[in-house]
Amino acid sequence: MSTKTTFKRVALVAVAALGLGVLATVPSQATVQAGSLTLSAATSTQLTNETSTASAAVATVSFLNTNAGDTVTVTAYLMSAPAGNTASPTMQLTETASAIVATTTPIVTPVAIPGQKDGLGQVANVSGSAANSAVSAKFRVYMQSATVAGTYVVKLVPAVAGGGGVIDTTGVTLTITVSTNPATDTVASTATSILTTAADTTTATDAVVTAVKTANTLAAGRAANIRVSLLNAAGVATVGESYTATIAGPGLLGSEALSNALAGNAIGRAITVKAGHIVTVFPDGASGVSTITISSAAGKVLATETVTFYGDATTITTKVLKSVVSAANDQNAILVTLADAAGTNVTNATTFYVTSSDTTKIAGTYQARSSVGYDLKNNVGGVDLGAGYLVKVDGVAAGSANITVGTKSSATATTGINAAPVAIRVGSVTPASVSVTLDKTSYAPGEKATLTVVLKDKDGLELADGTYLNIFATGGIVADYSMSGSLSDTTTATSVDGFSSQKKEFTLYMPNIEGDVTFTWKTGSTASGTNAGLATANQAVAGKIVASVSSAGTSAAIDAANEATDAANAATDAALAAADAADAATAAAEDASAAVATLAKSVNTALNNLKKQITALTALVNKLLKR
Image (tube, rainbow, N blue to C red):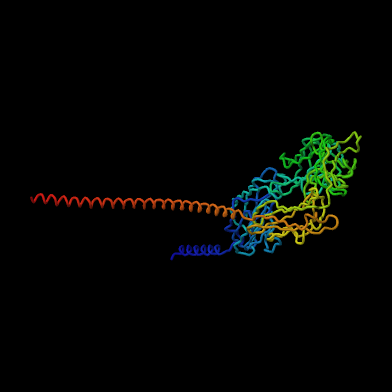
């Protein structure tokens, strides 16, 4: 081998050795590899003022690290948003694998971070918790308490912040649609309103309010209050905006915070009201019906209420509620109504005067009835008698009188009005006869029935209200079947207790059977004391009434059976007629048969005679031939 060749070989070995030395050297700088950033969905939704929700899209960042300090950041950029928005996008950590996540710069030492799953804001730093690991972290992405509804576009961009290496920084885009939260919507869509009288700030239902028209703009002159509760589109109460109140017709409006001592004055006819405040209504001197309209700030009508203002009373009417009274004081007998010239009810009267045409029967010559209050529902004994004033009378003795009620204080008074006289009778308290009736003659099983007892005096007139003893004998009124239901009244008393308005009514529920139900009784045989017993001729007298109980189905079946019976009877009649016709036909046939037999016999006789004649003639011919 030549010297030149030897040197070349030495050089090649040296170069190869140097090369191997270079390849065997490990890089001193860590590297981020296989990095990725993905979204669970390209779109998501949330409501205004919401933060993290289950509907938020999830971003996942993952990479392979070499050292624990290798770090990737993810930044959320707001690309577009509705006008007026001030909220920023936020990421909230939900899950990790071999990762430490924080809001700080790259993490060099992997240590536990308190609250690491809290919202991280717009930037998240993700570092491996150990060397040579598959690192990943997941984040919910949302708009932090956005107050403006609309579309938000957010772009998430990753970057290598520690350890070197390269990651795709194209990023991913998320579109978030924010809708108005019905629970926090401040826009009034509907409202509830409650109208009450001036003295009432607590009643939860609307009242019918009428008030005198006399102008008064001070707090003490209020005619009514209107409590308004605003509701948003979801029906949730809101105080986020004011509302307006306007009045059409007579009157003025005011507003103030609700309290038990309202002190605000009238403001005007169209006012702006702070949410949570009430509307107050005042008279302005005119009469008629006023309509108060409650509208939202946007002008949507939310509720309406009405208040009626009246003037001086020009008409008065009376209605007799109790035509028969007893000889006692203070009995509600007459319902009075007042109206102004427009026909509007006047409700501020407090005193009426009662005059009787016969004070020996009913007391009163311009007798004052003070502190009489107007009531929309004058309830006496559980019966609604209607709106107006209840005026009392004082009975003196049995007999009748005409009663005049008015606002005139004397016969010579120049102010006030009087109603037309009405007749009222003071009834007797001495019973003479009794009658018992049912409201119907037939009932369905279990149907409600009314049994009525009426007591009359010797002249056949209904008695005054009261309790009357010994009207029935022991056992009272008895049915031959038990009444159904626990709500049936007991009728077995011997007295008539609670006789009112000229009768005593018992509520009964018929038995759940079908057939006749009979009610029987016998009148009492003894009488002692006041309000007791009947006239002698009407004592120990038996009585009864019968009611039919049947269902509609039974009635239909009975009708059908009756129809079937009628049809059967008709068929029987037809069969009998057919039998008669058959008998007649048979007789005719027998007669015809007899005639035929007689004719046959005659024919046979004639034939026999003819045969004999032919035989004789034949013999004669033969004899002649022989000659």
